[in-house]
Amino acid sequence: MGSLIKGSINLNKLPKDKLIKGKNGTYYDFTLSVNDETGQFGDNCSIFCSQTKEERDAKTPKNYVGNAKVIWTDGTVTTAERQEETAKETETADLPF
Image (cartoon, rainbow, N blue to C red):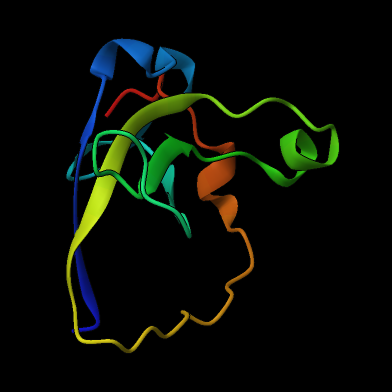
């Protein structure tokens, strides 16, 4: 394990149209950004709603929904291999299951 990050999300800021219904529950995609500097309240991570490639290309402003902080790290940070976006993006919250 490389790091532990603890945070909180303001559920009132989550746009309901981005909820993803799955077989085992309802999901919401978000992105966690680890910053180089620590903020006023000891946080060094930002949590925002994940964006589609089209939203990123259009420079749509990020919807920040919370903050977090790295609470432990072993000093090694690795990145996950990039995966192409899947059909999950086309699913909508109005599915019957």
